[in-house]
Length: 475
Image (cartoon, rainbow, N blue to C red; front, side, top):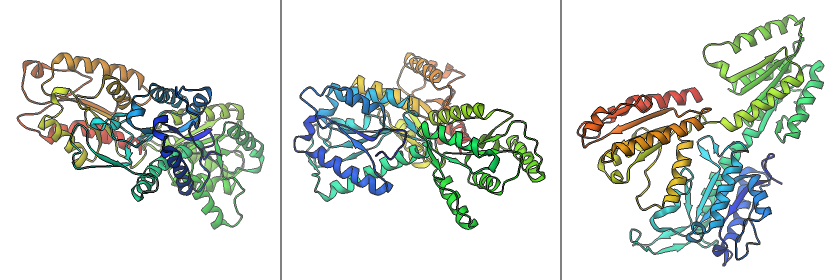
């Protein structure tokens, strides 16, 4: 049984058969599934192909599991990176994720990594770079050498257990966020609207949403309030139906949803006469709230004068749209993609820029790729990073104007693909050496931040203000 109702598999383990000759993957699988079940307090389905043959072909069963998997967990090793079929699994999962709510969950992505064996240049960090890897090995003293020595952790090692626990916590946070997306709070309503509520409940259940509360609320007020708060905390949206007559439970659950900051979707019955004085006042306040210029309107959407069938259709569209366009969650770090030419990769000012953004401003910034990274890995990195980033900063040091123009063209393509969630802030950071091309550079869609002789944090103010405004609009 899966933890997530809208997926057939919670975690899909992608691995190379070369790495399970000593049953390392088998034992890893067993321990991970047990730990996730303990953390979530429910059964979790972790799947891998146990019949990998010599060709490691992506079979129909593998393809089916990938299409309905919530999270892909890659066991990264040299054999994995060199396996054409493992790369195909990554690509197929990426395509499937776009149809099941998107690859991104807040500021996370639905890919986790267990680095079993080190790769030259720590290349495992460049396979979906926004997904941090847990390294199930320890480096020796010659870590920086071309062929470093290392010790892999066996499944019965204490270090293995510690690493597995950390990995399980990361996957737990992804699964929990996904479950909140697929969980909706369907509030109790007045008796005359019970049939309409049942229609919505049936439709949500058919669509495999998790609907709360599962049982009628207790009659004792304090116990009922506790149950409502608990259910709202697990739900991504709350749904409310209102008719002609005031109903204490319906109104109090709505007020609790508003206090919790829940995304609320309300329906006012067609041709409601509002014959009840209390209901007239309540619905007047509801309409005023929907027009509130303070920004509260973004947390409430309601339909008035529509049929229940029409409301049901718009409700389902809204839930699907929000799942696909969900952005950064409150309190999570915003992400900046730092683009840097290989000639500037180790320039002191580029390093200072990255350190300032991460250590002083507390943004999540992926450093530029090393020049030795393969073209295939680099392409996957840039494509995913540009699609997921909240801000994009281009470092222009020794590179040419031609390179900058290519970056502008690429950003234009990305912008066209991100119309529903535009990039919050973009800029080019112009560092020494000074050239005529740099001095005359001007692009409306890519503002120039000009450094003088040395790195100056003040140059970044405008860029960072735009990012923080974006955070405020999401919270």
